[in-house]
Length: 284
Image (cartoon, rainbow, N blue to C red; front, side, top):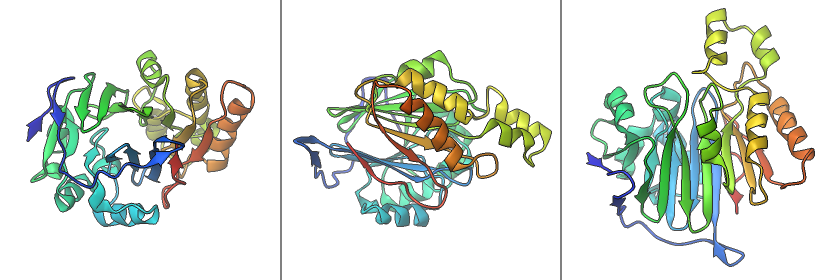
């Protein structure tokens, strides 16, 4: 196990191919939701010379297959970054890390909570609330509100700007909002439609869990958060972790589109995550 000292240590990586994409004369950032939903989550991020997965909630075989669908070779990944210990975010993390011989970046509490998943993997621990360097990136994990051991969102910064990721949280805290401001691209949760959840088949205790401060945010709450994050440098927004039972992609998209149509600050491309197929690849 290797432990990153907050804001100081730099993990050198494993010497994989450092080909750098360029877009209109500058280095290119690529983002794709490989899978998004309660059955498994994984996000591909490429910035400069570094290629990461945020979460690995599918089997290692399926993740490699979905990477291939967007033209990415799994062997080119440099690390897996883990947001929290729920199975739909870590199912394939240990196996994929071992198979590709890449580190799994995870907080100490999450590592301990899911130790069996990461056994025999190269684990690099970070501390929530403290930024650290990984290759050519600065990664800042920040706390979110979810019923997991140590749930975090991330900002990832490079010479191309900042990317923000936050899913699986029950309330939008001021900290989450502040950390996600100023990003060129965002992955944010849009879990459920409030009416569909209320009238849906879930038992009452599960509905209450989803609506609680440690559950998930709705389409309306997601759009309220997005409204706070609009700025003229925002180029792409991914709506993530949609419930198959309590949401409809058309409702999530419509709620966000209505917000975006009513402002003139920016015109980001909007993507809606899918459980069974990768999203379009955003290049900015």
